[in-house]
Amino acid sequence: MRLVYTVRAAHPTEHLGDFELDLEGVDGPTVDLVLPSWIPGSYHIVSYAREVRALRAFDRRDDSELPVDRIDKARWRVTTHGSPHIRATYTVYGHQMITEGFDLTPEHLFLNAGLCMPYVDGHQTVPVEVQLEVPSDWTVVTELEGLGLEPPRYRAPDYDTLVDNPIDAGHPLVVTIRPAGIPHRISLCGGVGNYELERIEADLTKVVEATVRLVGESPLTSYTFFYHLTDIPDGGLEHAGSTSCVVRRLVFRPEEDYQHFLAETSHEYLHLYNVKRIRPKVLEPFDYTREVYTRLLWWMEGTTEYYAYLLLRRAGLLTPPKYLETLAKQARQYLDTPGRHHQSLEEASFLAWIDYYQPTEETPNRSVSYYLKGALVSFCLDLEIRHRSENRASLDTVLRALWQEHGKVGRGLDENGFVPLAERATGLDLQPFFARYVRGTDEIDFDAFARWAGLTFGPKPKDPDDSTDEPGYLGIRYENSGGLVRAREVLSGTPAREAGLTPGDEIVAFNGIKVTHEGFDKSLKHFPPGTPVDVTIFRRGHLRTLSIAMGRSPPEKYAFTPVEGPDELARTVYEGWLESKWEPAKKPGT
Image: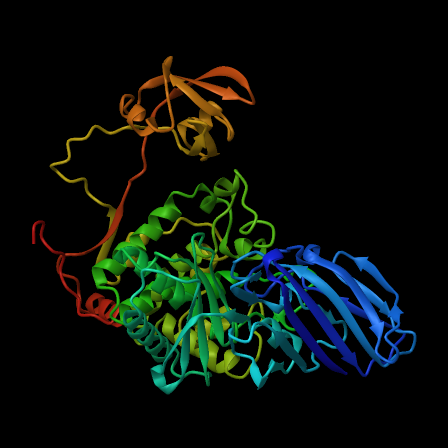
């Protein structure tokens, strides 16, 4: 069968694209066209098909219309009447500038095929062609194989490859860098931003080179960084030969924002190995119609997140103290999540379809992010391996073994295959570690792991010159509700939860004194820890009062700090891990 998709930027002011699918070599009484309900890398079910309008089919022999029946939300069945050559037409609304998006405006087209190009059921492995009808002055950027320029035409060897290669067209700023001798395009689209192009080129070169050093080689012949500059960021989505990131147009300054931008890029770039080529066997071949469950997302996403900032350190884009500061912030975020006591990393991975991507008010109390905990467990596993092997092995060793045994040869990883591989690669018994921190919910002793690298971990001491009184603590995450404090989440084990404060409650007064969203933090300072307070609230429009004893806030900041006089192994572990000479803690004022 020969399949050709035509995309027409027909009504950009209305955000409507016209699509045509030409099917040649049809040999059955019916043909099913199916639009995916999820996109690889984004593990939640989405009704993309709701934006598809007026799908019709025609017999190419005489252009007569053929019957089309909607079988389910994302499946259309065409009765062929014996025709070997069929043309299907439809329209799709696209006005979402997100990483997995279809967005059409008078200035721009961003297209992820999974949102607007249905596959022909049973023929997902057939090569496909794509033809674009866009304004002649637009530049088209994609990693698909080019077939021609007038009009722009491209080819994919199969449907999975088509979905894995977004198409961007418009007026992007495109430059090419050549780290490791491989052309990498940087495509900046969306107009103005506060970026310095030469700095981005230099820093992305360093990120790529550090990543290739980590794994040992690159499978690429080319790559594209897609950056869409907007006012509402959406993160990034990995592809085998590109990444699409939606970032704030002013993300390039101040420095902390820019480092976050680089870390997001680093994360997505490492995915070309980990997830796109090293991936769970259960994902293959992709079934776009239903959830596909794996307990390995903690490694695929969490470990990738661990390396995101570590690669910046190794690339010389973060100092060791700055890297450790970032790691401490992640640890604090984890320690502020009560759900860590109730959900294991494997369970968090398995339930991503109904949990991580669909958070509720109770999520922090029952769940843990496999990104966040996965990154921190990977940090601990790295130091455990380095310490026990006397720095002869590390998490890098495991990643390289995965690449050689699975990613490089295209062999999926069995659900129970990770630990045996890690043990073979390192020569260590890792079952107890995985039982406690991956399959179990044991509390992580960050200080114990940190000491193997000559560091300690704990709350950051308060500045001795800070005479600020300690405010009371309720244990809520809140938002502005018409000037009132509205509880968005009430954390387990906190005074608010124990007193019966509920998500949705609006706090009106403390001890009869009015409380506002703007002055809430100041109000808490009037009621230090241990103070009993009558908290007046509106609950579903009804006024009531709760008696709450203020608690003590958890530490605001944590820190990884060099120990005094670490042993030689700890120094060696530190230097191998951060690729930097171990240095003692700086004295205050230096």
